Amino acid sequence: MMQMLKERWQQFSQRERIIIAAGGAMVVAALVFLLIVDPLMASIDKLDRHAKRKAKDSQELALVAQEYVVKQARITKVEQRMPSPPAQFSLLAFMEEATTTAQIRDRIVGLQPQAATVVEGYQETAVDLRVDGVSLPQLLALLAAIEQAPYDVQVHHLQIKPKYDNPINLDATLRIVTYAKV
Image: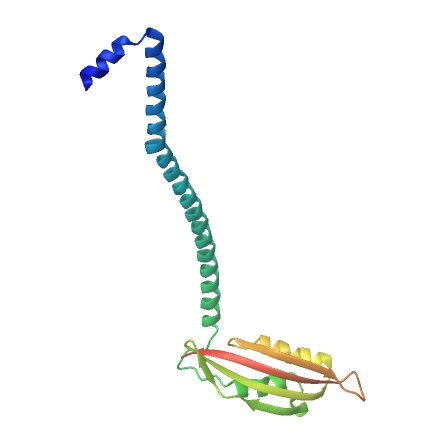
């Protein structure tokens, strides 16, 4: 078979040999491209897409890590203001003292403790306070007294309504909450 191809090659003219060699080279180049270069380029493109996606994921993860650090610092700061287990902090007694400080103790219509709940390792203690006929400065004094609590005390709900007969006086309902580590 090889001998026959050699004889055939010898019978071709110089121009035919150049055309056949160029055609063969083109077929070999096409096969090399189809079998080696094209799959390699497809793999490179796929890896580039994966690298871009992983870089984006890495940036998102870095942002989440920064947010986590900030939130962890906030939690640490709040936990430092929580009463430690041996300390006895009564939110109800603190609210009575705060209303006395704000000079609205006689205006209390209701001071009702709520059942303590435990959520994710923290005990939430709440007190509902309702006052009638207080002035805005007195209510602000109460809020300032709550803000200056020795532990983390928060106002979760505040509803203020002016009195119908005397709009200078207000009726207010507050839900005051504090947390402690369990």
